[in-house]
Image (cartoon, rainbow, N blue to C red; front, side):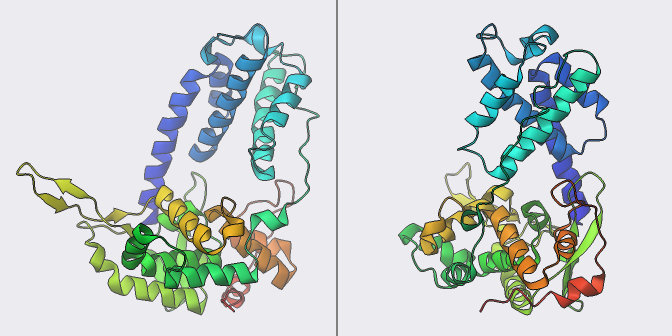
Length: 353
């Protein structure tokens, strides 16, 4: 089931975050011990943010040059100023989206609030730092015409080079199903790659997903008729991927060629597609068919495309919040329930025109 995949990814995230935390200033270890309720993915993203911030600090702040991250003492942390905080936020402005910069701000405020509370520092340097909330709508989602060009390109293979066309011949049916589910349901990339065969209910036109976090909460997302048709077509040819025995994943990667001792090559059984492979396929078709959005549209931006479309149709941010599986709107708006009927009524609003 999807829960097995979720459990596996959480274990991997914990291992990765533990490695990063061991490299950080000792005070960070105390922070993560105190915040024992952080999900595995949150712990990983927080630790990655801290690593980037402290690497910046070492390179820019006098007195820290040449130190390793784990050599930054509490006395060094006490010297971090609001000017240092502002310089760091400025340094990531051009390379990170508004959402990413807000995440940095949230994670760093949390750390330094903890340090302030425990008397390590005298003032939280991130307390009054802000991130502009100006939206970059033209950069963050596909409009109706771009969406049509994108989907048509996946079906036809238009714009692909010779090598990519060989890939397209093998994977176009799978790729179209993946993209249609993204655009039809707004699920996260981790939720999509975690889908198992038992998560499909064609009678009720829905998929069961395991939502973000360690709680392993299940939710339903409803497919449009077009997305459902694309998924059925893919499942009819899924066996051509030669899945490994007992492989439950819906979406598969073709197995690699393995060299045997006698010099011959043998095809490896197919396993669950990974996040990186999905990111690459989105990038490939966007570059070929929506060139003006190249480098901008990612699987997450397909989720944003769904959200924008739903908001334009429903004019109800709280319904969209539930459809996306969010516990809050921009971390400040109260969570509001949306009924199953609400979600069912929206399932055909994302058809291709």
